[in-house]
Amino acid sequence: MRVEPSWLNQLLKISVKFLMTSPEIASLSWGQMKVKGSNTTYKDCKVWPGGSRTWDWRETGTEVPSSTVEYLKKHGIDVRVLQTEQAVKEYNALVAQGVRVGGVFHSTC
Image (cartoon, rainbow, N blue to C red):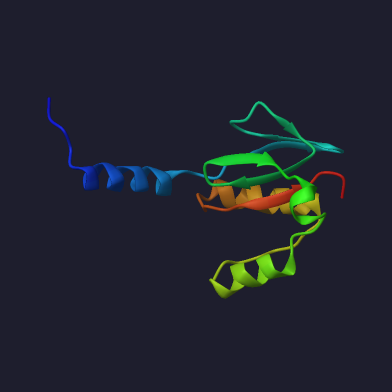
């Protein structure tokens, strides 16, 4: 049995991480969101390449902090703040194009 060097294993892990795609938002209705690849029904959620989770308002309040938006823009990341239905449409359109995209969604706005 051949053992790969540790640097090669690390490189493979990094490569797989960069190959992760953003999950499509499968459905949106008042107070409920479903994300492909997740069995959870979210009220509010965060999605990113490779995953999703509940958006817990206790972490940041009901809005994304302006410091977060500024940080993202400073690092060349496009930030869009849209009404939820429009945001989901735009997010899914980007996902369909193969763009690695993330989002924070509130299903009752």
